[in-house]
Amino acid sequence: MKRFGAIVILLFSTLLIMAGCINGSPEEKVHKILEKTAEKESEFNQHQEPLNDLEKKEQEQYEKIIKLGMDDYKQIVEISDEATKNLDQREEIIDKEQSSMQSSKEEFDKIDVQIGKIEDEKVKKDANEMKKVMAERYDTYDNLYDAYQESLAYDRELYELFKKEDLKMDELQGQIKKINTSYEKVLKTNKQFNALTEKSNQKKESFYDSSGIEKADSTKE
Image: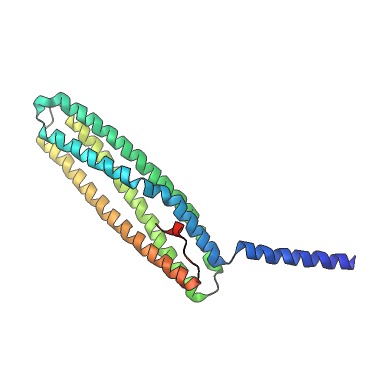
């Protein structure tokens, strides 16, 4: 029985060692979390081109309406309805983007536990700096999403105004001013988001360099 007990203890110890090897170091676990965040965010990148195409199309629709006079009221209404459908499509796309970013952030939030287990102080410092920038990037995206939604709402109001036969110029100008202000906010926040994306990639590189982990292509954004 004693011999059997020793064998069981030996087997148990071996299994623990094997489990440690399979699970990997905290640095490797951080690496895997980063891979998963990039994977979940991949849908975000796929939507950029169709979103840009819709934005260009909506600008063309707006310019067509501006060139038309009230004698072409029926055509103005038709184009306004088309532009509203365009807004619906854009809203659907950014909602998908937002969902993708949210899934990525949920995966990213798992990183804290693993960073806390890193023993090397230099590696831990790089990991924490990376985490800080990435967290700021996620927060900035939330602001960007809200700003874009606001701009879409103002655009909807504009195309409803175009359908008013008694539309007054000061009413139109007031709405356009609101739209311009909202899009300035979108552009400013988008610029911040892009800068943080670049900075977070740099911080990831620093973490990979100090931890000795080779960065996989799937982690690139």
